[in-house]
Length: 288
Image 1 (spheres, rainbow, N blue to C red):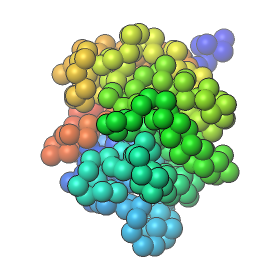
Image 2 (spheres, rainbow, N blue to C red; image 1 turned 90 degrees about the vertical axis):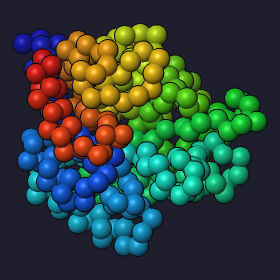
Image 3 (cartoon, rainbow, N blue to C red; image 1 turned 90 degrees about the horizontal axis):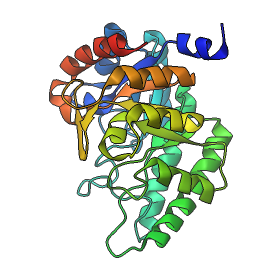
């Protein structure tokens, strides 16, 4: 068997994001995913699911770690909670805010996420840049992002947990090219990796999603997946968008990627158990 054949034989590992199960208690969400046959979970740190700002975080994290182990679930820690830091401003404050104290609050959240990830044995910590504030020039925004992520990368290096930055439509760091801009600005640290959202590739990347997977392979640390249409940033259930998934999953398997591929349907929590049940058979059927 060639190295390429060996890579192709590795089974992809699928998870489901808790941001798509926001109406369930965390224990119930984890039990559901284990019962359905998922390999793991994308755990968004939020007020209803392992609140990163509430007291006794270390003890609560230890309980979640035991629960994951008992259920046989692996985990990625995600930091895309909408209102965990500011109840009035979605995803605020960000790493790009003009106020250094506001940026520091986001950095503190990411540092907490790194500690949680290390305690859970997570394979990565996910984050994103945020939207460039009005009146902020691009050069200043990139400088703020690089400076804000430096202590997070230091902590990730010490903890042995990769930081996986996600290109997000509408954000400063929106594309694969933007990821490489950041990576080069930071001196290509080993701890800096990439979260690749397959739907985002369909939405705005110049390459088809399968080609994005191949291009991103050396830096790939986390994968999110859902359907999407060109030019419309709307996370859709599988089959409701335009993506042909077999070539995408074949390309992903060929990279030898061993992290989780997590279904990302945050706007479908009202029917989260239904979509969790529907998504895994779809992915298994589409996978090589």
